[in-house]
Image 1: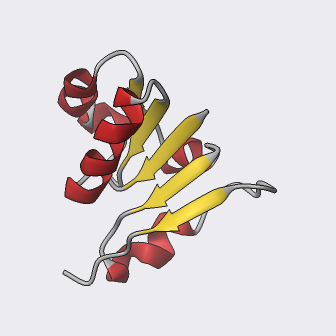
Image 2: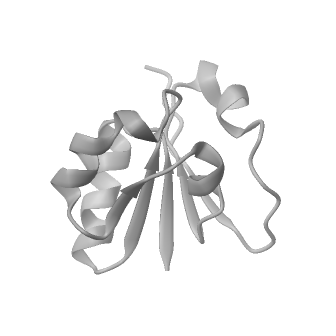
Length: 93
């Protein structure tokens, strides 16, 4: 089972900590691209990787954790996927 994080801030990291501890894979993404997430991925170990927003959005579970003003841009190009579970932790701050 794979979890995709759209947004790589505090909320995504908190959830990802539980995900990798349980032995599942997590893909982090952000608006700046996977090349900016190396240190974060390294901190979470071998079950973590960096990907594009589309790659994170193709996971079985997707956590949307961006500022509410960024939602439209964050989900604009997500691939269609039946059965995808989205956890919306959109933050107004």
